[in-house]
Image (tube, rainbow, N blue to C red):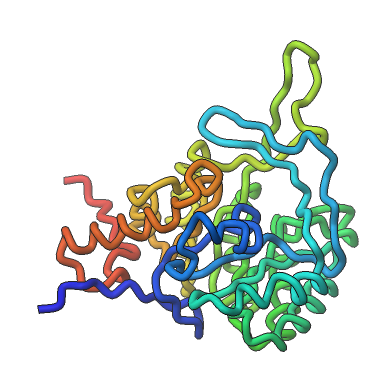
Amino acid sequence: MDLTPNLKIRIGSLELANPVMTASGTFGYGREFNELVHLNRLGAIVVKGISLKPSAGNPPPRIVETHCGMLNAIGLENVGLERFVREKLPFLGKLPGATIVNIYGQKIEEYGELARELDQYPEVAAVEINISCPNVKAGGVAFGVEPAAAREVTGVVRAATTKPVIVKLSPNVTDITAIARAAVAGGADALSLINTITGMAIDSATRRPRLANITGGLSGPAIKPVALRMVWQVARAVPVPVIGIGGIMNAEDALEFLIAGATAIQVGTANFVNPRATTDILDGIRAYLLEHRMKNVAELTGSLNTAMN
């Protein structure tokens, strides 16, 4: 009798071999980890955010270690769309797992142009929209903190591509379910959450900020309880798959997100600590399913029992 559990999951029209993905900005363009990780085992690689033109990001220092996490103010440094397609995509296209391209812009039109250009490449399985970016028409307010803006930018991308559209939600909002519903109304096939939480660090000896940008995005185990709560809330509020992100360091963490309602998970900061974190987590999920005699990983999604008796 075959007891091998089925790890396949679906994100819109996209079927993945398993629910383990990398988080944008923590895994480069995939090739950087080629000597360290069996990339062909991953459900998907989400590449670092791509903009129309290359970006140098913010000046250093731009990474600071914190208690149970890290602050980063990289500033979305990337090679730009043209170089990504020419230099990075051919390698990714040879991998059996899906390539998901995270996109960002400062104008809604830029999101649409990126999605339209990427739509012609079969190597790209889906696009993930980073809506934590400044909307220059709104005076620098991020698209992801206002429902109408989130719905509009999602709609523009949805109209520009035939590929599954994933919207990455910011936690820096009063009600994340309102943003989630707006993104779904705009045409999102799935939601990934959470992005980093805005924070800062100060050097008391110099009385200066430790980041040149002053503030940065907090990630790692410190944000896991917040991320888990938000995934649980959003999974109950929308009819599309939710991808959990935030402080997932091991299989136990990943299992908690799946039980809370996530269909899949993304591994971020853990990649810097343990480059093989993704495959270790995958092995741990499979072992859990075998131990509990579960035939399908989908049985875990949303299986949280909130009864207190």
